[in-house]
Image (cartoon, rainbow, N blue to C red; front, side, top):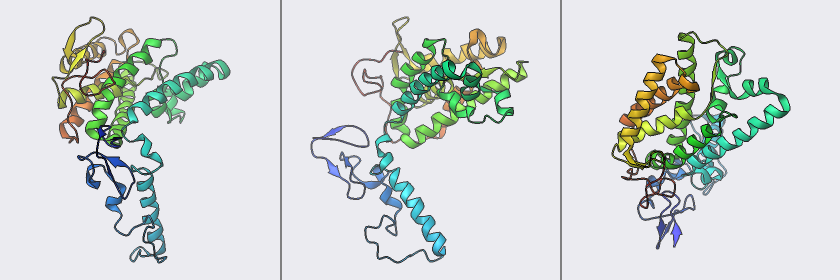
Length: 305
């Protein structure tokens, strides 16, 4: 019995892909069903049948090198490459990055001070004007050092909801969605704050915008997905939870912009982006009707939120 490298299911009679070397179940054994890097390698840039001649005719020497570099990148990011371990696991990679960043925040604050922390991790108009453009990304993984619930809540939501969207979209598209929606949500919060008269130094950080995009996405592809709330302990459909969050975010935006220190504009923009993307995205696997106890697994008890 072996574990399928694509879906994680255990297969009594696994299949091994000759090109990438990974094992798959019957459903994902074909190269086109597990995004095998060998699909686009018409001229065998991996060198399996390399004759020593450059067969890049139109591009000349530079074209041949470019094709080989692209093929190498595709191969290393495919199932048989160095980055293959991240396939199907980007949710947990992002979780790890959140907690690594959280620890780094304390290290920076205690050694270099709060100003350096702001320059490295907080997205704000002032930071962008100073050229600290990296905060568009670092702010997605940073969370309030003074509020443990901030990162804990986002981690729980990502742990249970992230794998469902990742299996539906695939790891590459899920990673792109998470990073883009998180960054755009932060920028939307900054822009909304400036329109409401907030100073340039007002900042935002946290993965909440990307998390709301995930929830919005699930609300479209399977609005009847049941989730067991922790407080109060009642089961609700993902669509209902998302609508409640949306109502709260709309109220927060029009009342104060950051009611109670919450970036409502970021939440709302992330939610909208997730909904819009779900209307055009095609999935490789369906979304179950309930969240399993193993972090988005199929079957089992309903996961908390």
